[in-house]
Length: 154
Image (cartoon, rainbow, N blue to C red; front, side, top):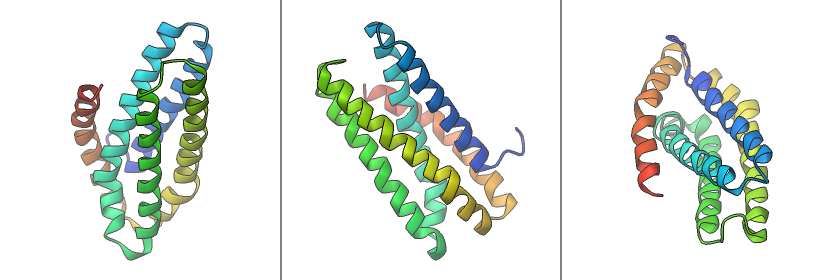
């Protein structure tokens, strides 16, 4: 995907996150596998959100027509992060953990659907093809460092 846009890159990540949700659902009876998949999900989503904020959202915040969408999505990222923090304090796979995870899943799926269906098309109208490709390259460069940071926060 040499000429991938930022939206292509973000959608690839969203698809991975959806697959991880499906794998976690399949692993429901295997606590060890579920914990491994959840940790992978937490790291992946945390890194994705940080790199997205540093690239696409930073660009959108600088543009008056896109600022509100970016602010909304940043606040949703904070909400997802709050769920991760809450879950870290709960016994893994307890009733309360599963309830919180269900809420996290619902909110996160809403968030990525909203990005793909509303925010990305709006931003694509405002950004040039060159900007979209430049942001994709910057995202690809930033995300590995954010993965390392998220892994260190375990």
